[in-house]
Length: 396
Image 1 (cartoon, helix red, strand yellow):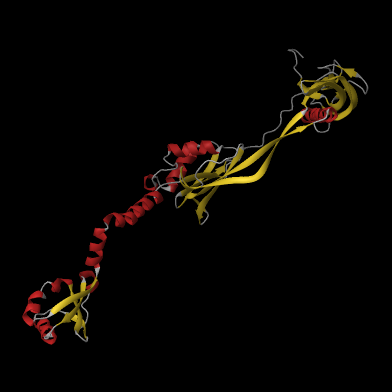
Image 2: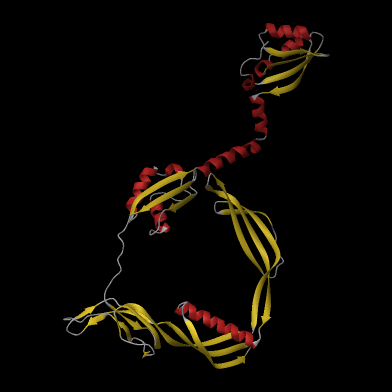
């Protein structure tokens, strides 16, 4: 006979029949309306299959024919369900994992902002949070992207368009800022004055009237290029422009230790690996403390990505590297040169990289308590001009 439909769902039992009246048992099964299939003769009897529901009607027929049966297989959904029920805690693991995975995929894990130049990303994220768009928010609780775009555009000043795009668990906020008119510089009349005492070495007036010459000594606040043209009867205020350089003297108190401490990596390290899920990290390898006396730790995060989307799952590695500190003893001459180099670098940083040190004079030098102390006077050619707005009195 043919195998009945949906036999796997209903359950199938495979039997091996032995006895003197095996053929009689098969005929009795047929007369009782019990469907059997895959009937095959064996050396000691016959093998066959029948549905699980018909298996319980087999016992009286076996007694009637004097045959015996041996179950050789249990096939179908009822038997699979029974085996799973015996191991229900093991079977619950994949189900629980699937539920957790569905829940994690229903959360917003990352929100990033693109296209903003003037507007701070933190302000955009704060406005999005007020509209219910933030990390660890349920996706189904969010408004539609079109509605969110309109609400964010209303909250953010200086924005002409806001776009919301969601890919999986990541949301991108695209900002188009409104074009602002170009800010024109204020052109109020002004002088160029000296910011310090100096001796003029070079003066160039692009606009305005120079009132000092080369080799002239000026004090702090003296006018170098005047922004007033004409005489008392006919005068006009302009924006003074130009470049003025002068010799300026700077006094430095330099202190350099003769013992210099250096730090270098030895090449020895200890790695620790973590599995990262959101803000949590579970250590997998690298347990135990290192035996390093001194060390530095570098952390590397390697998140998983899918189609360009950064997922909240990944690996983190901590590399603890051993460092060794060494001490270097400097000669007084080497310490002196190092101190002068630091002072020269400070001059360039404070007064411009185009500043030129014309001369230097060591006023005082001594060695005490493992350090070299110096007082040095530098003669520097640098820019000395700064702006001063012209304030007119009432009636002028």
